[in-house]
Image (cartoon, rainbow, N blue to C red; front, top):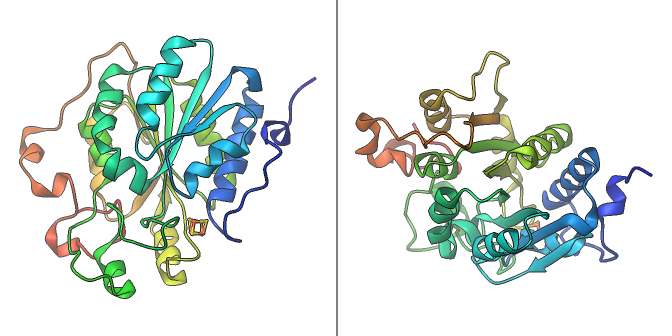
Length: 283
Ligand code: SF4
């Protein structure tokens, strides 16, 4: 009998704040599992630490809510030891892009088949609202967090420039898009990165979440995800392109950043004049 999304939920009830974007991500992920008819006994969901990392425990799978920033090496080990498992890694922007950042390029170059979904809400929610590596500078000022003026990281550009073969972006408030994005990423035979724009209703202002949503655009049907230069352009745009930004056959070598971009500071973070934009924007 075909399994339904609810069959991929554990008996644990989420303790996220009402309205948290992570609820949508859990729903989209379990829908994708059901679409692909994955068996729960063949699923591993590994997370780090943070609000979004609680998601692992809410799935019916071999789940492990592990240690801060270390989900990727744990998941890699699991996949190598149990290649029949479909292994998913989930975590937040703080977990992935701060303490966990050093693991990302290595997971990409190993290209072990994993789907890594980063639920990026631009804040450390679990520890009560500190700035994360993707927090926009305008938000830091709103929150009165003193002494932090670094420009935010651009997660999509970061993984593209590290040679990732599959890069997609979606939004936690767009359930059909989440579902389809996860479904496609789970099919990719190598390391697949999914940037999920996810809101935090407790530590972001409503204006901030609205602004992120307002800047989202679906990639047009004419978009060619095999075009690396176009993917880099999309990642550097002032808006958030949703869809599969880049996909290459896993047996092909990684593309490299064009030489004229590699030396630009703006490759890793927004240029100074756009530093007040929300995470992911650069231009
Ligand atoms: Fe979600 Fe923010 Fe609440 Fe954490 S603090 S559960 S990220 S809304």
